[in-house]
Image (tube, rainbow, N blue to C red; front, side):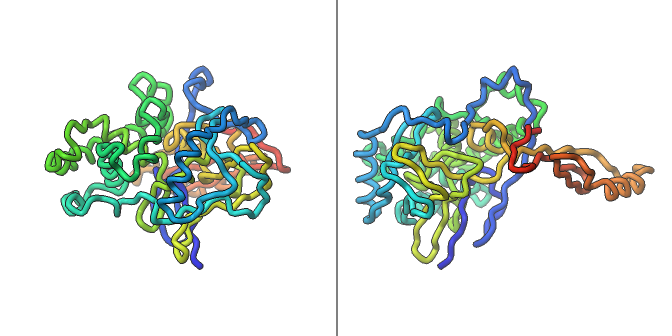
Length: 358
């Protein structure tokens, strides 16, 4: 049996059957701007405000029927302080399988219509390809077999990832690398849309009146919800309702032999408690850029300090020697590493206590 740990895709660099790498970014923001950000909270502070019985009654039977198997007998859909979530509808024990979603009910770039797929330029990436799949299904509306899922994806006004921030809002983070990363993503979305525009124009039955804003919304849905997979990326219905807890040891796992994605509980959950997983070991900068939220006292926060060391610098040899000698300074509560061109500094746990993030 082969299992692949899956993580949301937005910053995915590479994927093999054993490893997924994510980028690390810098976030430095004045406290006066923090109300802009949506924070998650420690698990013991999470309350289920509403159990979405109607939503569950409609959605889960549809997904079970489409999959031909029971997706979950332990979880139901609810609303917490931070939006839609999954909570325990029965007592859960550590090691229980919380859900199983077959590959057959996951949306991937393979779902592109055969008449559209060969026309997409090579330079267009998987996020944009999957965005095209979403646009087609949105256009079909209730006639789409995926309507119960597609119609319940977040509207653009409910999304907080930084690609949707306006210029004034982006000024709040102009001194962080998230600012430049956001500009880069916005430019990539425009380039992908321009590359796809001739294709969209060739199929007015699917893309008539589709604007750049429509494409940007679909792109944002994929970038913030899709998971890395052997098919490049996948939207996994139901599993993508799980919220993030940086201390959780539960992940979305892919079993290639059984052709399913599953989540195993890392601890016990009481009836009505929100069930959480870990998206990855991400600093707040990555969480904000890719998912639109931050977490207080994030033990994975880090800062990358860039510096210039040019080849014509007459002190280059001395500086490199100093970097090598001082690459591991004795700083309480801080881990430090360096490479030619940058430093990475982050706080670590001491005696099981969380330290203030950088």
